[in-house]
Image 1: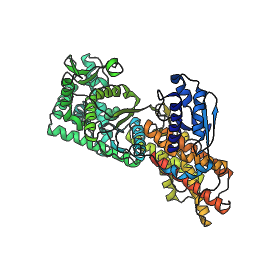
Image 2: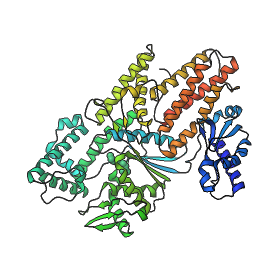
Image 3: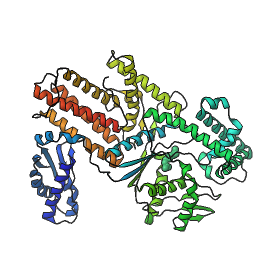
Length: 586
Ligand code: ARG
């Protein structure tokens, strides 16, 4: 399909150039599938203004070249200047195999994909889970179109919170609780620390402060706890063996929990280069920013300022070194940009986080551009997910909750599977429940535009109707069952024969698979692939409701088996690109 669209677009462009000269005319005009026609071109409307011509006049010049293409059965000028193209059914049938071929648009190019990136000693919250699911889908999609992908988990494993945690460890640790649930206990003592610090602050008559003020200079009247925490932090940063050992322990126990989540979700990384990895590069990074005139001194600190003229937009200044010499989250991000550029020369760097970090990444990317980082920089942000009361059974949004969420998903999926097929043996039912439950949770995240706010409900996520994973997984299993039944008759797949209208629509839908995958690779919006798979399953339903497979005469039956096979393959591959498995029976 891609090749055809490109041929049509090139021929159409040439026709315009011949008539009006090359000025303002792209080398390839856009032709794309549309609900109104097999293929549609809207370029005449888009170019009309620049060329000072009526859209219909432009379309009339393009039309003959479209008609001349051997794949085209019919093309007509419609409305304001649309060109609607009908393809020869023979052409469509002959290109069935293209449905499984992805253009290697990323060949020879590397993408650094920064996702998941939870914070050590804190449980992974729901935002990290979304980042993990979206990032994993992007990794698979980018690889499918030929990119070399470096999946990098930018762990939050460094920063001021470790001074506090060390103090809390010495004062508040319950060793038994820690042995049972290390991250839970680290969270508890951290929260305890914060509460105690607040009490001390109030006693001093100092204003209460929020977590975000952590990087602010010490107040004149500092609580004793905060002084202790800063002292432990300085020791840690100076390499004090006891503190470094504690810090490493925090990282290790946290990583063990994260890894349990990753294993369950089927997620893997190539690199886990956390913030601490960049620690030794921070001083040099800031010096270099200063030497190049990108950063400047301001009240003892070092900041980068942004102007509309130079950076395209005026943004608040970015702090890269505090007056006390300490560095920040953003400083390690700048170091990471340079490190990644030096090590992998990526064509693109994608960072997946929730929407609250948009300003941070606009600042970071502006700094990177001034540093000459040549990669295309993309902040793949997503809206927050709303959870109705009671979705999680224990502590909100934490690792244990995720595990209980997945347990609950599997339990509910088992009910769904039982309702579909009461005869499924218990072991198989468990396997189905795992795949469907996990699929439902992931697909719920992936199927909506990532920038919209979504609400998670069990009924919607697990519904067997509508744009859900269980629906697609069931569609897949149903096709496999059809295939098995027909195979029992000794029939095998064969070449396509003259296509009925619903078969034609189905093949056309299959041919759009690589287009959907490419769209996701370029736009980092996996919901486009979900929409595609949902539409494909719908086309299959129409086909199967209307035409017999098992009882068709042999040549037709063989052709329809081929169609079943391709639809199943595309559903399986498409779901796999989203990180979702299928089962052979449901
Ligand atoms: N650890 C951060 C957080 O939890 C996300 C890190 C994203 N990646 C990055 N390069 N800053 O908010």
